[in-house]
Length: 352
Image 1 (cartoon, rainbow, N blue to C red):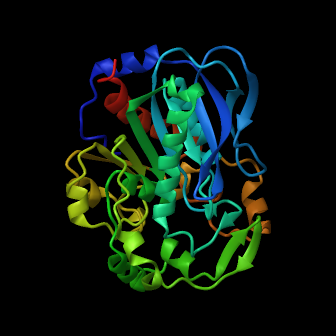
Image 2 (cartoon, one colour):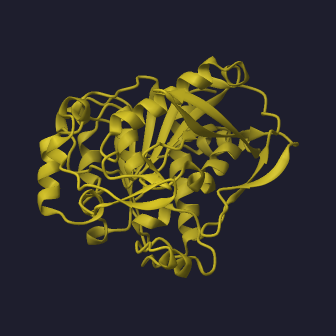
């Protein structure tokens, strides 16, 4: 595994340990463009609240947290989460709970149009909607008296996975080029490109037939616009999507730390998300790989029988039967370390 390129001071572990606590969790609704976003907020919690398991279902194992537990006093950095295409923010609970225990308030929306049970190829490239969702979450927390006194608005970061990684890149200042993305999909027939021409979507948890997506018919001005939110001070990008489509000059202009993580090594990393070149273009970029992982290793641990259950639903992606050579729980522990160390360094070390 390639370690982060920047040396992490010994102080970081001390700062993180000082904020160790339990993870609380609350749900909230955030109005955005005429629709309500379902947002989950994890936070450093004191003793109290009702125990729950966030993200637990027939396929995935969830993570323990306490509903409505009191928040640890003080102002805490805010970390936004953006989930991958066809997933939910609750699927990142294995990471969110550990970040909350380390002293972060962690908040993420379920992105309409690219969320489990409501995901279509036509909505997938509309990153401007996802970035608007994420900025709306910051706005809502800043205006809510229950959270405005808890969050340090000068210390905000973002963690994104896959399409969520692309959303995080755009919120950090990256801009995508539509023609470059279309040309990439002209020749690459896997992953996101395969999804666009699959003719399949999901609405109200039902599989439906949809038109194939012609990327060149997307609103170019919206696709290529800047979605920069200057409140973001650092970003962690795990297997970020649209890796072949970003405008190089926009990456060079990003002033904040950008921590890229690829799941796997060498030729095992899909062209759709390979990020070493992106890290080199950013002024404060770091790059790491996680040996023995695959793209699906960022999803929660699967329950016994989950692979067979998914097949019975007509799901053929290797979500629970991938070719990772290490247990997913072990990979999660390594990822938690990489993500937490980057966020502590960028948002806590200078803020205490």
